[in-house]
Image (cartoon, rainbow over all chains, first blue to last red; front, top):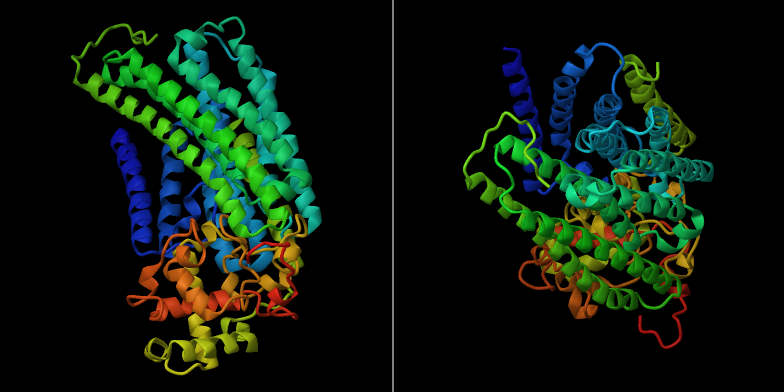
Length: 374
Length: 214
């Protein structure tokens, strides 16, 4: 009965969010609070429904966590915090800028919303998953418990304070803008410790990057995460912001982290779990390789391309040339980006084809819980 | 405490979130809470009425059908609908609405944005924007004629060759000379942006870079 209740809770919350989102988009409504990610675009009447959906998710997943006894593993800290934060973030971002605040102060809330979506929803879930899967796949414990404490609590403290960095040089009070900049640079140091922790874990097992597909996905993501954090600490400064705000540099940054880090982690997890769930080994290792390389190279080309055009756009605009100079000049870069995106998409098609082939191959249930995927 | 359920959820989860919310959201909300917020009716100013009446003269049939007479009440209605269209069509995806004090923006667009400009119902939620594929629009009002705006919305490439802006023919009844209620509303909204400034429209002070087309 317990399992059935959990099942129906999951389905119910998925339905809530799906129905609400589809209804809102079809009605052409949007609330205009634009995150670099997505959620703030639902229509007003969708928000309470989606909020309820998030509450159901939190209850559903926290149930087993709260029943656990004794000291908790680091993944559970991240998951618990993520469910609390996501619920609060959604409430803050979708209700306040429209109903409780206006103007510049609402802009400050919108900035918090934008960043909390990636920093308090996606990031903790991603890290929690990494802390879980990496030790399983490498068959060794995480290198440092102390660093995982520093990592979690540093992220928890600094991430929520960054939001205003999305609106630097707006009329938001300068002391708040400086606070957001300092907080962002601080969190990049914290995330660096987490990345160091994971590379410390990998130390001595470097060969697995070649043999073990999920590990390859995870650690490619880690490298991109480190690059993103370095880039972020630089681009958040007023010096860089003056040039690159509003340009494609920021778009490149967002894709680098959202696809190059979190999507790669999820794809790695899927690469690991699919054979176990389907009880069949992967139909084609070649397709797995194509998936990885098309995704990684496509994303990297996209990142370099957009970062470069962002710098150029910044200079074109500040040199006071007519606007057309920046759009005409960006066009070749946008075209290259299309091809990079097609490569990434092609990679996903390879993955999809591989999944279909695997589903259609004969089942091989075994007592051994871990069929080799290397 | 650092690894316990209560510690993580209450201090890390709720506590730090609230700390950030109080310091980064409530602080500016309280700083500005005495600043008056204009209603849509109060946002209608003489510069906007000039543009609104101009719309009724340039597109007499469509205007009569949509709004009748160019009164202040109708202008407020048009502003409200215009803003909804601005949000619904995703204009804010490519156009920002704040001028920064850096990067020569005040030379290109006009005065650097101030908080008081965003204190009205039409900025709920605030339309700062986070990307410029097209130029900033916060001082767009009055820079170009309503004819230009109509043609530009109908087919941007006809006034701005190779423009990446999509076409919006559904704001019109067949061609650029026949904007429907939505087209008129969006044009009213765009002509309102920046109309509250002391010096309006700003293009009179703009000095183009030598040899550049504008």
